[in-house]
Length: 356
Image 1 (tube, helix red, strand yellow):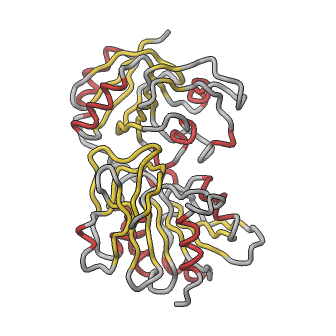
Image 2 (cartoon, helix red, strand yellow):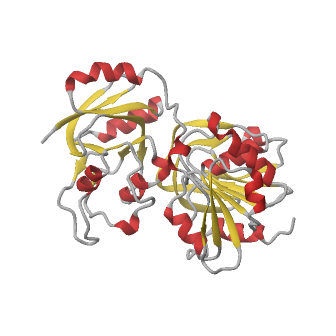
Image 3 (tube, one colour):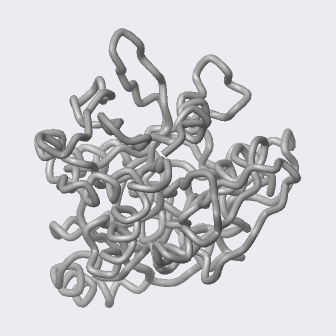
């Protein structure tokens, strides 16, 4: 067994045991509430730059299967768990979680009291953290963690690099601004539409010239107010007067910015499953993975109407435009086949039917 250490920005150092890749890594530490779905969580592009802490006590009890990859690679910077199971059930066959992390050069650390880690994050908020293997490096890493928060354009690291077409023989094309889209969204859009996938920094002119019937701005990692995303916000502002626009996660946050709203960094974000969202008299149980949110109060005077809220903390989860076919949600859309709860795809079809 290889010793390793979880080092937090507040100076906390926790000793554990390594699994996966052996190598020091830094990131923002977040916790996920999901009992399962760890493969989906760490491969979600919205996890880029995160050290993910599992609130559930055991991880690795079923094998890795490529059908559950959200992007084809591990996007999280690291994984911290209480107990790692290295002899998984053969239900899904595939390799172990440790083998998968090692292939992707992502370190894992087990043997932690993750209840304490979650309490620290809930009390002090999301902070910088590191997984370290050489005890002599800890003091130096502590200084690095005090040096400021994530400065990289994480969206730029996970977005498509060029335009591509996905021809599903549907006869109707939806544009997708890829800010870190996962495979699940691509799969569900493909059931109804051909897809024109654009990089995050696409111009409004390029989208309008593609003659799409509407545009989805995908979810993704990081701060929607990052300077490198100004062009994306400007593109959304320009196309929204001509095309229906729908946003997910950071996509919704950038729609809010495009219409004059503001965004805020949540204390510890929403990560994992069983997140209750209320819309009128209806509640949805959702899966989420975001650190930022559009600010409800800032939508006053923007024509954006807040209409969905998190039951746990009252935070904004969804909005619609009062005049234009534009809306956004913070949570992951339910699959198309969930006919009674696939709000996002049903609403997308509705606004794409609106004639500008």
